[in-house]
Length: 439
Image 1 (tube, rainbow, N blue to C red):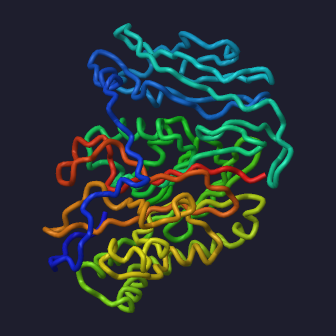
Image 2 (cartoon, rainbow, N blue to C red):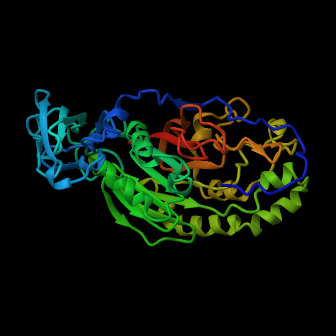
Image 3 (cartoon, rainbow, N blue to C red):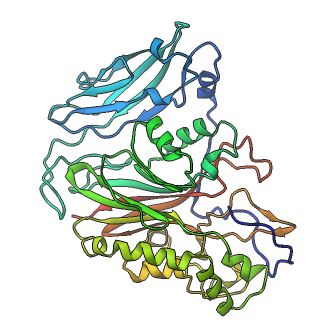
């Protein structure tokens, strides 16, 4: 969250709501699941539908679902069962502790299941579960392949031997604690988002672990940042400065290295320009004072050996950078940004100079038509002045093909300080990018 303690008059006209453009608003209108979760007489699933990680023919499969169950008083008394399974999914079994298990064969098909959980009240709660099964065709082509099974990505499909998968950057805003019922709302959002790997910021206190365990995903928990993944995390690296990273194994045995950062927030450049009328030279100095310039340089320097091998193992960088992009602040977009015009924000120039690509701008090259603002869906007023809107959350990459990228919120959030009952639990929009592995 940005500091909003300044009292000067705004220097220009800035929109006080997020541009629709390529901001995707998930409806958040389906209230049916809430009756189950709020029942006082027994457990209920947080979501109506859930997609597990991908099962691979010949490999042991396991997916936890008990983390999706709410209102549980005595975990030992809950009985889990598969009530219905689609043809070809008979290989999936339910364990007593709420895990779907099995070993699919080459002929196994994606399973559509109805699972139930029954508490001491004897009334079953039900949820529809999809268990995607990877293609039984060996993927032996493509750089970085280890000859594993091809398969489905994050809502994507195998297309010419390439896997699609979704990556998201999501600032939780103090873990989500500024909004009522934040855990259930976050789990609903993540389970419906088509994201497979999520870089989380503001995770102090173990919020990445909390969400990973609820979804049955792998997780890495740092101090302020964390990463959760539908796919297996096969290596967790030592944190570097304001970031951390993991190595994730995708379908087909191919891998991707994922970094996640949360850069310093104060001083904030758009405030310096829009509220304090600072010169470009002054703002550049204050970018260094914020720590962001050195922080991103430290992370990118640590990434260099991996970036050199990105043709074999692609690299992704997600995060809340707390600064805009030089791709957005141009002469053409000056009226969107206090009349400043072009400005080389160090936190975006440094990744670009290292060969990282801004996935949102790849999908939406025109910053005037598609600003993609992520700050802020709820902070619209800054002590009587319009809050400057900007794109400060990013999904960068090297070695992948960007299929699409969107800024995402749920519903139409009420502005702060009336955000407590929003379905959207953050003060940022999330950024979700669909990638495709290159052959």
